[in-house]
Image (cartoon, rainbow, N blue to C red; front, side, top):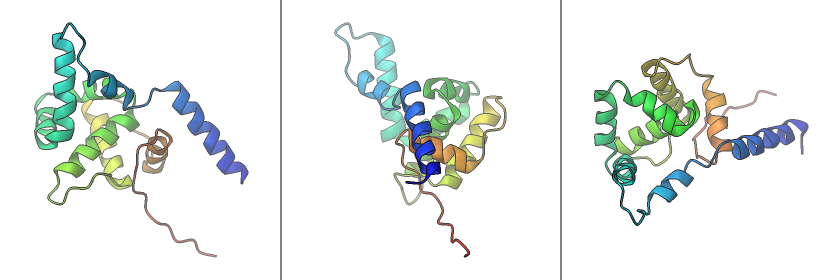
Length: 147
């Protein structure tokens, strides 16, 4: 194993322990508490809308100026927020895809940063690597190596 690969695994392991798995919140929210609180119901409907009706979720995101900031806060970082946006766009496309490409991920990151008034996001490869460290699938370009 190369030293670079070893250090990349350590970085991924550290980022996984520091940040929670992106799906943990959704799994926990998928079961209503006995009290049936309104906040839990709202969370479930948001999650369902994101997965089952991505076109409507994207439209609501576009209509509300504060929604990008909320998306960034809910996601816990630019990489996960961009992934959620890119994934919804892929699912709402004419030919639906379950996994976004690195380019789509970067375009989503640029949009989230611009609309939530945060600094410019890191390069596409860095965002894709961060998503992969969080076990979020991303289609990366194949780079031919010149000998």
